[in-house]
Image 1 (cartoon, rainbow, N blue to C red):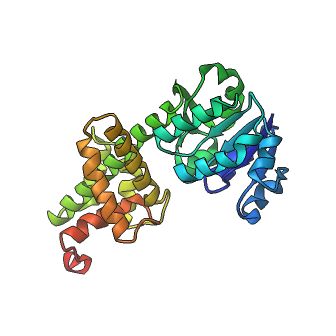
Image 2 (cartoon, rainbow, N blue to C red):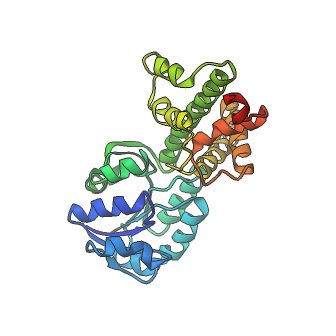
Image 3 (spheres, helix red, strand yellow):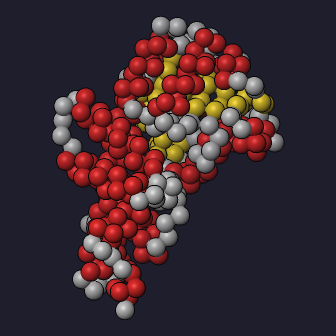
Length: 294
């Protein structure tokens, strides 16, 4: 297929490489051409604008930071997308924005598909992402070949916006579990118990999880280098609480976790890993690592 791709960061670049490896013709655009050089070296072609990319692509893929970025790209492409073409957005954006874009696209005879992913950069590199998509189910045949290059678990969740609802649900569970790991680590420390031993016991019990395995180890080693930057989880929780407010439902755990993420952002740790939630708890209780290690 003739595919366009915008968003060649830690997630987007390996996804674009998989599409090239599967034999698709790939055109790319980026705000900085140097970001595209690795995929250009593999055979992708460069275009000078999102509009030019839209004109030559039957499917345009985007994987950018947030709602405003996707809306901005849509406004630059909408007049140039051919009727029947598809814009597949792999970003995590507000469900309401995905629904609005789908309506705008439908007025032009163009399809908008929200297809957020889970699995992180490791899953993107391995081609094992979980892809949860919302849009017209009649597009399944056209999208299967695309998604098969990128992911292992592909689920059509429902109409436009449903993919984003699924993604924020995923984030609610995952980040709440990161916060729970941080609280367990903090409780163990102030009780004079080795969290490494606590974690080893938990991993063999009912609390064992990928979150405890991965983020718990980062907390144990005090390795706060970002896998996924915490600011992105903060953005996702803002979207989740916004959707909850629109639906008039309470999310009490999510609200508490968002407050912890707010404190993380206020501390200037948004560019680091979400395991920094441990440091939020430490700061709140006047933590001094030197004192505790004495």
